[in-house]
Length: 144
Image 1: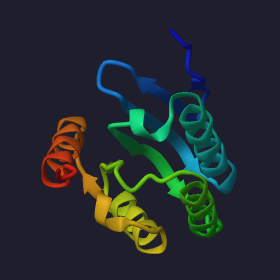
Image 2 (image 1 turned 180 degrees about the vertical axis):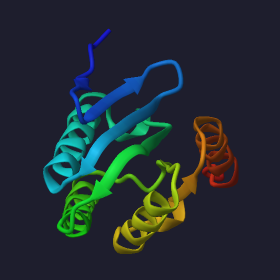
Image 3 (image 1 turned 30 degrees about the horizontal axis):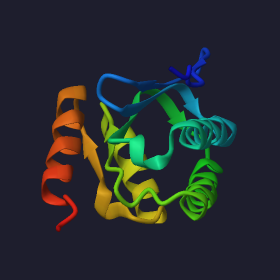
């Protein structure tokens, strides 16, 4: 079995859960452009190893984010566009986990600037995130 890349740092934890086939990204502290880039680089790394078809969903956890730096939104837009040009993530639902009103506002704005928002949802718990991913697949299963 292939050992997948993992990130464990003060401001970012990112790993692929083999049991659920879900990518988990946990942000901590200030949300910066460089933090966003590191998360997208990790996503590209694991996708290059296992293939996009193996990813059942992704959970981005913003609950420990303390503030959002001004350049973060333009970085999200650019990195999201690059990732979606390289890989077809159209079948990968994304749960965006928030805990505060500020986090919700900032993530909601980021949702508006990133493509394919139909497969993304703001959620308030890990359980709600996993339920959304399963529900999304139930409603968007390939026909035939």
